[in-house]
Length: 315
Image (cartoon, rainbow, N blue to C red; front, side, top):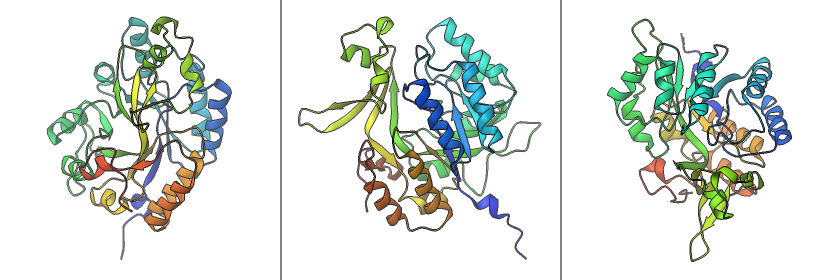
């Protein structure tokens, strides 16, 4: 008799926080489409720059309630780089609400969230099992692995045959989520590089990043796309993609994929990943389908294979 719950074998599709500055109408329309998608989890909130005010916390909460009513698990993310008391107050307000799980964007959020269930964001560095166990004791129930970790390393930190237990009063194991699609979020800075590109100061940036829905490409002297500037965040120009790494993802014991929003064809990206990971579509067919879409960059997966991050997918 097989007692395995089929739902436990499903790879959950998680929509990461929107990293770009889009007009309010575009954001609302985007999440209306996500509500109708097969995605399981949606992470909401401004994680890059506090000057982006098309949506405020009350708006994110309203969106969260709408998505939850559609059956989505909703997580509220805090900012990854805090530089002012106002940003700390916003983080504390996010942490204080109890309707939705919170994703800790940085170490300051960890102290505020300690003792409650929370998600470790990808910028809270976890590179060893002892570190993960410490965060589990604080209350972490999920960790989004740093984007530069290869899949074998993730499997060693959180092996499928020995899941990390929770804190003293909780036996809920901590779950791993991997960044599986999108421009790699590489670094944050006190400077705004988009403003600098336009010869503007950070405090008088004119919100020029709203003109670049997938970031502002930075090329090499040879004319090759290299990085993408997204306000204070630096990203890869290429799109990290684990569509062809299904077997390695499963071997690492990972059952959650984070797909980072892009401005076009994102619902097709979600469906493609679900078809490969949950409906037995051949990974090479899924890769071919993604490559046929006019996505904002070529597909790479080097970090997942312990190779240079911009190495193209072997397929």
